[in-house]
Length: 220
Image: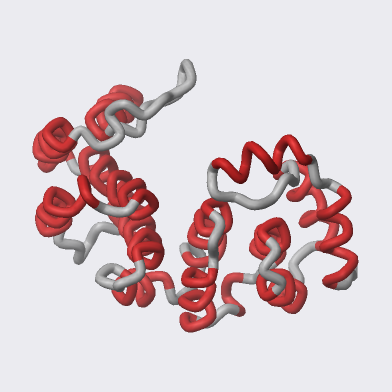
């Protein structure tokens, strides 16, 4: 389906729900579009790299989310993705950008190492998300002990988005690397990061010791 930028933004505007926007804005996302309906629109459009770039450049949060869904990861260079991660002001757009584009990019490892010590906390958050993926699926070459030492030093005082991603790395080390599990749990217990995070019934807590225990139980 061929669609112009103006037509795409108009379709998104028609899907806007003021109540949903109010809820989303409290979580750092200035849009009110139901994500299931947005995915349906993306499916109708199909992959469209040119439109994806236009949607991202629009600065509209819903437009950027739709742009991520219709983008082609391999057509974005490392510098494109670097610029995009610094431009996002939306929690959801940041998460989707990393999950749907950066992690699928041939430049993922280059960007992980570029961002891990970046002055921008959002870039560091992206690096920690990429590190979690490597911890779980391709840990060869990672200094897991060194990662735990850095997490131990920095987790408690990290900015919220970076803290969340760093905490994920801590949990993944404990889940996927039994030799380091006790240390990961001990760090989590001592720092108490996300220990009081509200969790709906039947959902797993993001508090690393509980998260590790539940995932290991499921593996067992």
